[in-house]
Length: 92
Image: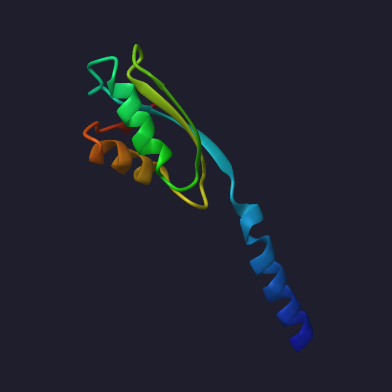
């Protein structure tokens, strides 16, 4: 029984990364007012651990971000844009 429990615990630890999922969200970033703003927003989002892709569209005032939800969260993404001077919200 003890071996079975140990094996189960080990399998759970090894499989934990499999529970992580890649997610894509779109953030509304209304504070982008010039053509240079998207570069700053993209740079801020790209520095967040777990972000694999960022697409910032100035005309729509939005950023689409693909990330590993085991390494970061939507709140961390919004914090990153806010810290760069561009507060954002999750777009529905």
